[in-house]
Image (tube, rainbow, N blue to C red; front, side, top):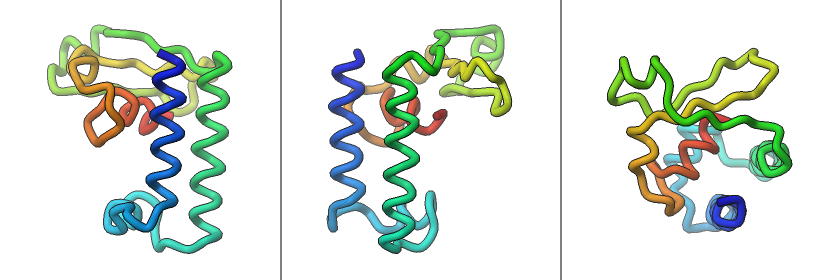
Length: 111
């Protein structure tokens, strides 16, 4: 899974930095596209991935909250020092391809 995650992350960065990246999605998520902002976004995503890759995050599959909310993808507690990502069964049914509503995309969103 880590190799798949790394491949997905590498693909995501290349796509984000390419001219073919959907600018409306970028602007919605990160604001106006500037070189400085793009470098900041890529740097933060890279740091999150490195932390994830080296065990800085704990991924928990399923929880009472997931079972009580069938359409819930995943969630985190932002100030939880354990950096736990709770993945719900709904999100685990997604594709492992890098896309919106995908497992790698959901993990990146929660990081």
